[in-house]
Image 1: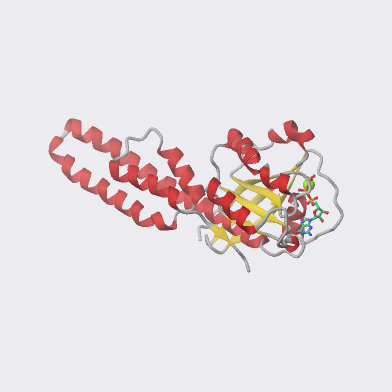
Image 2: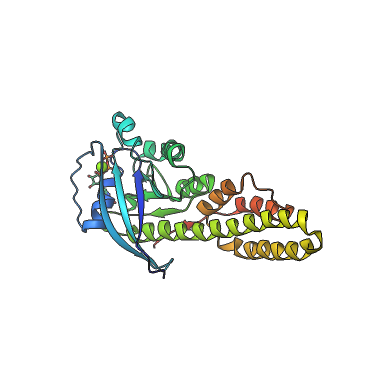
Length: 260
Ligand SMILES: Nc1nc2c(ncn2[C@@H]2O[C@H](COP(=O)(O)OP(=O)(O)OP(=O)(O)O)[C@@H](O)[C@H]2O)c(=O)[nH]1
Ligand SMILES: [Mg+2]
C-alpha cells in the first residue's frame, strides 16, 4: 500500500428516488431511513476508505446530485474534476434503468472516460416480475462495458463492494496509464535514437517489444473502465500491430460483481 493521502472526487448520478442519497448516508454515516426527501441541488460528504482489492486507502469526496430533471443544469456544473462515478438505477424503476446511458454521456461530456460502476439498487425488491431483472442489468453492463454491482442500501448489502470495485478500478487504470506513458516515452526516445545513432535502434526496439509483451500479460485482469480509458489514452499514439490487436481484444469481456 502506498503511503500517500489521495483524495478522489466521486460523483453519484441517476434518476430521482433510486437511492443516491441513501447510499452516501449509509456508507459515510451508517444511517438509513425509509423516508424519501428529494435532493435539491448538490451536496457532498467525505470519508476515508480502504480498498481491499487495491490495498490502498483513499479519502473519498462523495458528491450527491439531484436526480430530478429540473435540477440537471445546476448539478452538471458539479461534475467537473470527478475521478470516479457511480451510475445508479433502481430494480423497481424501469425509467431509471433506461436513463443510465444518458447519465453516462452527461458525465463523460464533462469529465471524459473516468472509471464508472453501474449500481443496481433496491435488490431486496427483486422478484420474477421486477421492472428490471438481473439479466437486464448484465446486458446493460456488457453493452456499456462497465462493471455492475447489485446493492441493497437498506441493509447495506453490496455497498462496500461497490466502492471497492470503483477504487480498485481507479488504481488498475492508473497503473496502465503509467505503463502507456513508459511505452510512449520509449517510442519517442527510439525515434530520436534512430535518427542520430541507427546502430543502436535494434536494441531499443527489443526493449519496447518487451514492454508490449508485459502489457499483453496483464490483459486478462483489465477491467472495462480501464480498457475504455486505455483506448482513449492510446489515441494519437503510433501503435504497433500487436498493441492494436490487443486493444481490439478489450471488447470481449466485462465484469459483473455479485455479493450473494
Ligand atoms: N427497498 C429499498 N428502498 C431503498 C433502498 N435504497 C433507498 N431506498 C428508498 O428509496 C427512496 C429514495 O431514496 P433516496 O436515496 O432519497 O433517492 P435519491 O436517488 O437520492 O433521489 P433524488 O434525491 O430525488 O435524486 C427512499 O425512500 C429510500 O428509503 C433499498 O436498497 N431498498
Ligand atoms: Mg437524493
